[in-house]
Image (cartoon, rainbow, N blue to C red; front, top):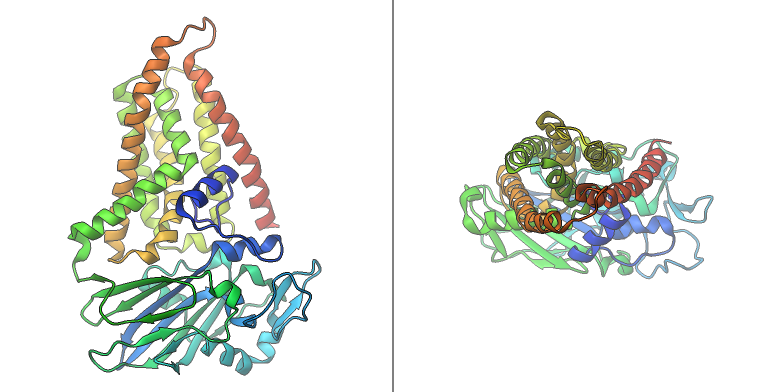
Length: 427
């Protein structure tokens, strides 16, 4: 499943929001839901050439709206903003181009180190669906280049706007505990609900991770969750990655339904094991590819993957209803696994900023957690299906057909919803 910002299945979105407690109540208008889904302020602090480089990603509304802005009020739009045809706040992109100095001033204030502002070296404005996941530091550095990258669109829905910054600060003294803080002028309503994820990188490869809720004010002293070099083998960190992958399988209803359909169509332990291995091989490949974030930066990619996942459940279910000798061949399941792997990668991107460790350790641990989740689901469902099979007495309706029909119906509902979203993105 994708992160909340890109998830399109109504049932799966609700389950994920309930389980992870990340869906927050909206502000002013339907499009505002996007801002609620992307509440994270992500910061990477990296020593560079005797200074401290800061990469920051946060909702643009946090920077451009004044502290006491009322979401449902009728105030005149602040600088760089205007009302669109539906009355919602939109970013006036041409105004940004006309006053780059004023914009730079506002953006510099987004972050302070020991009360001082940094030098703004670069900024990038993106719609939510096209943002970099801000997880893997080399990708972050490539994403936020020097200069202002504001795009050429006439306007952008403020609720859908994310800004990524590149700031340079004087390096703190060795052994000091610098204080990292946000702007005193940020929109307080959004700032009070923000999730702050800060990763302080050290020259020797260590990474200290910090998390907080509300206005950003962190003392970067003794590390909250230190990550030494070669931490991929550390049991504590690896267990955390596995737990995260395990949980995302259990709350991803579309993945749960596909595992159930695999069980219903297996016809035996050997065939189920073969199909499971093919599914694992497929999703392991695309989980690694998708976790890098390049493909998911395409606005249409996440909705297309979610649509394909729903279609895969329907396809597998129809094959079972057709009473074919081998309803799901291993090569077919492998291809389906490739699709589901991208879905898992969206979930990984949503949690990886809060996980310390190398890219390889995060991906391997998360993928192993997925495998354990699939195994747990299979072990829990198999005896139930066996009991239903033993008790089934309907002369003309097979129990597999009776159980797979609701799966097809739910997936068909998702297919309609996700098709509508994909068309909206493409239009």
